[in-house]
Length: 152
Image: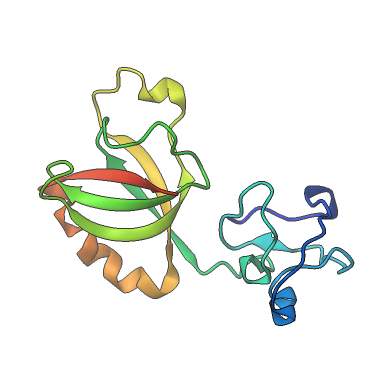
């Protein structure tokens, strides 16, 4: 999110849509890219580039929220760009889902995971329309522990 997109970042692929109207949802190879084009959400390597994931600089509708995640609460496959569900509670049982399918903006490196006893800082991107509910949703942080699950 927030990364500038240039023609060098893209590669052309031929695809065929069942519904021709779906073509308009994605960026065609012959479109000229504006110089300030940025990703407004995560797009994985090899994915078609949806127009909905693009915006100009300053158009991001995402609020970055830092979370203190339990040392054992971060799956090893979670990296920047991963989609995760965020739980607050006492482990996998009895935990409350507080954020669903949010993008990891910043995750600790593998070296930080080894032998960590303190909570690890993970920054997630929360849609702007959920901004008012963030404090309420994460209000249990003092009482519980934050755990992440990776969304495939």
